[in-house]
Length: 109
Image (cartoon, rainbow, N blue to C red; front, side, top):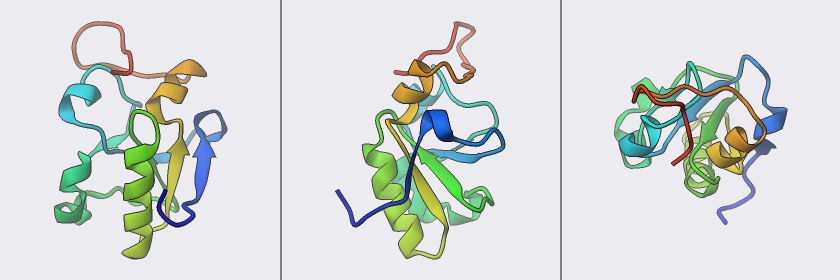
């Protein structure tokens, strides 16, 4: 793990949380949080202007590994970022709402 990254569980996220989803496109289309901003992990450094304004920005991936790395990197670069522990898998497991872009019911891939 990177140095200690602020972390919160999906079930503890506030309703108005600003979420940055760093999964790949094929993961995003199958299920994501309504209103989340999607920037794949590899694109984050080149798309800092697209990072949503949040205090903090909550970072999600599938299980929490990629998002922990992105949150640590963002924190080192002047952002206030918090990792979503368990990622979208936990989000789905605790029944938080999701949408898909496939015309099918959302799920975490």
